[in-house]
Length: 282
Ligand SMILES: Nc1ncnc2c1ncn2[C@@H]1O[C@H](COP(=O)(O)OP(=O)(O)OP(=O)(O)O)[C@@H](O)[C@H]1O
Image (cartoon, rainbow, N blue to C red; front, side, top):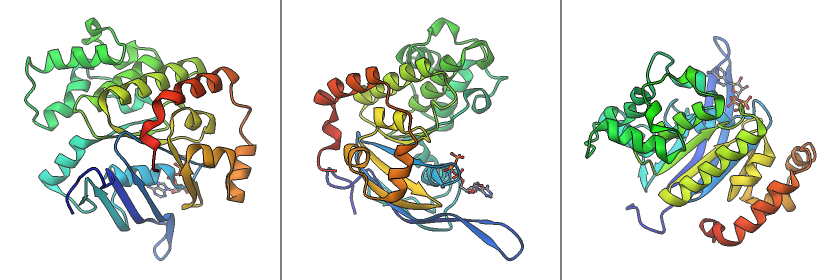
């Protein structure tokens, strides 16, 4: 199958992950999960702690191998890719992790961190890596003059911007955010969410956005997948999930959410009027 406008960017089918619990017992952390993701679309993945969200995201990023099931990217099966083919896939799919301080090497400078994926990919960059790093820093709202600093010299929100700049340096088609704003204060969260949304508009990539915080997912996702005990219990357009949940588990999850910040909600509504084109037909 070739990749065209009608092929989803990502198609995940029957994904299963089992971890060894004891010599004879396997624990099924992800059980028969499937979804499609289009270009420029954001899928929010929600569910209680331990429901399998991160494990699913890590399989899609090919950081861990699925036990069974398939992952198609741009119409090609990437489930068992290795070597150069896997590296090529990694140039298209990048991950932003929860804790910027532990996911960024503290001994490396920002320049080394942001340029690492470009070097790994062997990308030729016009003007050189240093220029590319400074541009990437500027894009995420960091002072390019600080490229010789180390991650610990930045606040949590700024450090997460380094992680975002690193992810975007190779111009991926899919960015997987695994609890990417969970460790940040609420006001910083809002700024980073705005940045993620702006970057998506500018660069046309898709997100898988894993979060236990439904208010955050409501801010950013076009569609939502709800996980419980390793299974996908419900998925659909964001407003359908939030306004008319079909599954009892989703209703319980939603009822546990504190009231949505009214300022965020009105900002979201006005923004949505112009910007939710990516969700049409999904
Ligand atoms: N490497 C591993 N070895 C064994 N069990 C694991 C491993 N990774 C995850 N698990 C288990 O798989 C289940 C799903 O974990 P996962 O981290 O995917 O859940 P989650 O929904 O992302 O939760 P959280 O929000 O707490 O991170 C959990 O029971 C977890 O303990």
